[in-house]
Length: 140
Image (cartoon, rainbow, N blue to C red):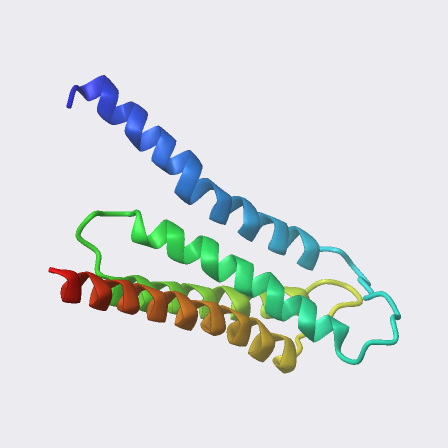
């Protein structure tokens, strides 16, 4: 592959796999930066926690997709562990950051829900990868 084609592939990989997770992380931080952010008062119990769960479920998918495309030699297990560690630390730092914003506070249940949403999706992705490997192995 020529150097120019290699640069083009690197750029398209960055735009397709890595930029979405960076932008999504930026949106999370931007939302965390809003002082006195209130959730809508809808008659659904724990709507805030449902939002946190899905926010990090999407973040987990994007993160795993990015990590698996960092290098061709990374294993699924390492991708899952790196993703889980990154998402757990990001959620913790995000909650701590909110503590510094006027009208916002650190909420342990938000953190637990964030990590729960992330781990739920990572578990599904891990099982899916494992099943596809098992199926490929039995077809050989």
